[in-house]
Length: 282
Image (tube, rainbow, N blue to C red):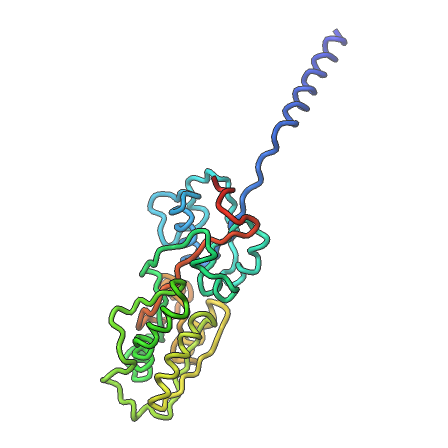
C-alpha cells in the first residue's frame, strides 16, 4: 500500500513539474495614457479605433480603463499625468501622447506616431476666459488676432499637419467693434502651454502690437494652473485645453470659465516605446 501511495504522489509531482514547464504566460503589453478624464477617454477611443481594445457600449468622452470590455492583446493601461508621458515612453511598450507634449519632446505626430487620431473638432483647443468677460474689448481683440489669416498660415506652415487650424473664415486680425484706441497701452495676459500654444500666441502678439497693445504670454506645463489663474483673475485668458476638458474641470472644481473661440486641433498619437512597430499587438 505504501508503495502505491508513493507512486501516486510521484505521478502528481511529475504532472505538476510538466505543467510548470509549459510556456510562460506572456507579459502584459504596457500602454501609457493620460490620466485626466477626457484625455484618457480620447486615448482609449484611439486604441479602440485601431483594434487594440474594445470599450463598453456607450463609453464616450469620459471613459476610463474600467470601461474596457475586450482586451484581446492583453494590454495594461498605465494611467500617467499627460505632461510626463514623453518622459516614460522608453519604459513602456507604447504611449498615447497629446500632440503639444509630443512636439515639445521632439516628436513629430505625423511622422513618428504609429497611429494618429482624426482631426476631431470636439477636441479643438480653445481660448477661454472667466464667465462675464466674454464681451470685453481685451478678449475680443485677442480672439480676432488668433482667428486671423496670419495665425492660420503660421499653423499650417509650422506644424505641417501635427496642428490644424479650425477657424473657418480667418480675418485680418482685428475686430471692427473694438475700440483699439482706448486699448492702446494696455496689456492682455494669457496663460498657455509652451507648445504649440505660446508659439501661436507670438503671432497674435505681433498683430496686437500694431495697435500698441501688449500681449503678456505666461507659459505653464500643467493642465490645472492655467485655469485657476483665469478663475482668480490673475490673467485675462488661457489657451491650452479643449472644451470637454474645460467642462469636466468646471464641474470638478466649481470654476466658471467659458470658451470664446476654437482655434486649432492637435491630433493625439500612439507612439512606440520599447516597441517600434505595432507588431506586438498582432
